[in-house]
Image (tube, rainbow, N blue to C red; front, side, top):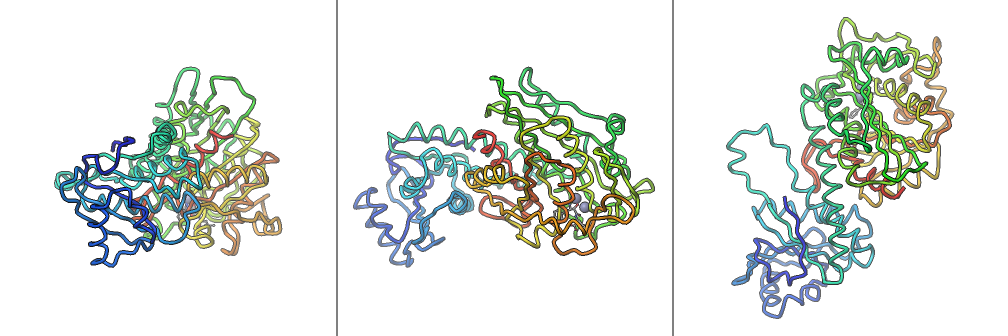
Length: 496
Ligand code: BES
Ligand code: ZN
Ligand code: ZN
């Protein structure tokens, strides 16, 4: 889909649809369209009882204008105070336009939005929402679907002349951020028979760029030599070899700032011998969403050019039951020397992350460590499916991540790392056990387990089990991988 920008009067642009966002004072807001158009809209609004209520919409045929139709989309009385709300509203209007089979759509940004945020931030948020809202994963659908498919091909944003250059910058960033997000969605949506650990390693190798991006793949033998036995333990039930993927980005100007990103990369989670039920397993190709987010960041990092060194690790493997699989009761010695009793082979993410986090921290000594993991079902019980849980040992880093989430329009909520609950992951026979007796506070005990492997380095753990995957269509995302966290990380890196 193409996004373009113009300072022209929206009514003078030849297009299939013009979208204008309005509040209940809509008559003033559309008065610049001219008296004739206003009369026409007022007549239809009266018949349809349109008053600009939130989510209310009105289609009006514009006779004899280059723009064929108008869509007034109600935002209601309330002010839109954050970019999450703004993107949701734009996504809703674009979805309506998409359904009404319009190819070229003109979109006018509400002046009210520009009072609360910079023109660059608003245009980035709007353009991003438009791109995200029109994404589909339909490569496996048949010819009939593709023949009948009619989707928006071009979105034209309008801006007053003085705001053109800010809008241009915003749109360029939106293309980058949403492009990366769609990359992550594609990776998560692709079936697990394709996205094996070797496949993820190949994707990473494709990012290599002399002097900027280095990629190193550690094979099974090297992983064993390093002593990453927790990671290897999880992988041992599968026929697919594990891969430890390391990506390094160095900015052109040398800097002493360094951040490490870690993504959970279970390319399919059956639960292992603690086998999941059929219905819980249905969506478990999503369990590499953290890894997909990191790969997506690296797909655009050379274009974004953040002024910070970024090192990323993905421990990629499958969690399968077999004659070679981990057994409940097995004890593994992790990279940092701590021993773990595996009581539930379905709590595998914390095992692979334990090794990855301690290896990352010890070998790289970064100023900050951030992991993204579809770690626990309990996180969804606590926060629902739209919000990621944030756990941290450092308030400064927490503030930075929260701010990036505000800018990206993604939802995170801080959770407590209550030390008292550590009792629940103490083992009778090893240093730790990988699952607590009670399921209460399961996201917290999982995070406390990870904390045992990060040492004193400022660390944020994002449990993205809920928002990584949409079980139904939403304004900004169709069913499937959401690319959650990609925009958050891009904002964080570019403002670090
Ligand atoms: N990958 C799952 C967590 C998950 C569940 C992510 C649903 C997204 C949607 C994880 O490996 C898992 O199975 N966790 C267990 C932990 C338990 C056995 C302690 C869980 O949450 O049930
Ligand atoms: Zn699991
Ligand atoms: Zn898992």
